[in-house]
Image 1 (cartoon, rainbow, N blue to C red):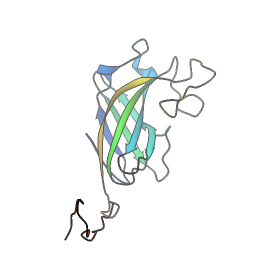
Image 2 (image 1 turned 120 degrees about the horizontal axis):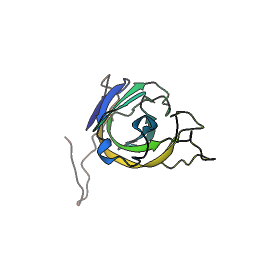
Image 3 (image 1 turned 180 degrees about the vertical axis):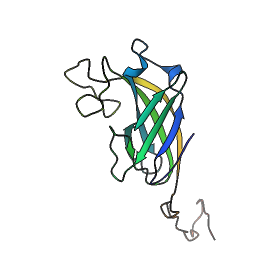
Image 4 (image 1 turned 90 degrees about the horizontal axis):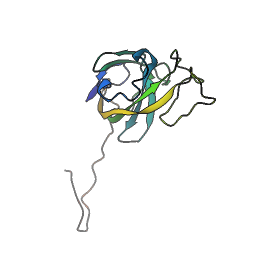
Length: 160
């Protein structure tokens, strides 16, 4: 499980190499696109790592905080705090990796046209899991409201 804090960057280590899809290119021609989905409001953020270092069995990713997330620079803004899901997609290039609007897919479903050696191609899902984002200030979590006990029956009730 990844653990992070709102309004900060983070570093994580994910197992990617055991599930590598395109083994015909060198590791220098591979990047990973991460899709983060919030469990509560279902918001989605995509990001390539600010830095990505591939090791023999895992990949080290760093992400930086910015109030405005941007997929190609690895800037994220995880609000609201709580549980998120992550999916890691392998993207490969025929030549040099270029992370921009014209050469790198922004989602797992992007197909860049016209195809070419400088265009990244999503190979597929290599890993997924859960992530917990804790609050930095302690005020961003959902506030629960206590409800009155219902008058009828067959209700689930909590409170008091």
